[in-house]
Image 1 (cartoon, one colour):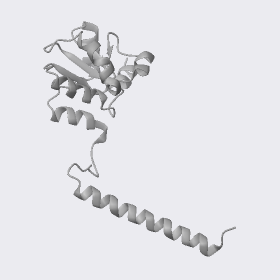
Image 2 (cartoon, one colour):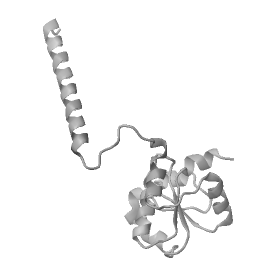
Image 3 (cartoon, one colour):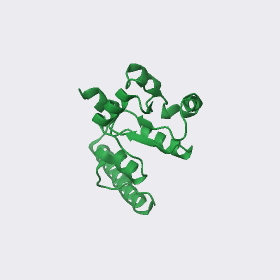
Image 4 (cartoon, one colour):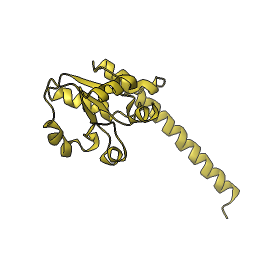
Length: 157
């Protein structure tokens, strides 16, 4: 069994390592050009990013109208297993985590001016936002984000 002094030495070393780690983290945060804010509205982070990029947002009632009307191509940016477990009616899978393997097939369904709505799991998921950015870089001009995503869709009546 370790002696009392040995245990105290281990605890002291652990505390020193924790303090050094915290100090280095603060220094890295202070000098990094894209630092993460200490305080922020993380519940709406993806929506804030979308608005900053000029990507329009739709809420759940608007998304239900769009899905019912069939006026937009709806892209599900979640992994295929999630899509297979359930998705918005009429949605096409375009998983952002495997975009290269699925983009060309989905591209056949799209034209640059076609209205497209992308969604993923919900407010904290940024896959649909990243998909919107990708589509805009590819020349698509009418890209919309449903940031509330599958979680809100499934929970709404």
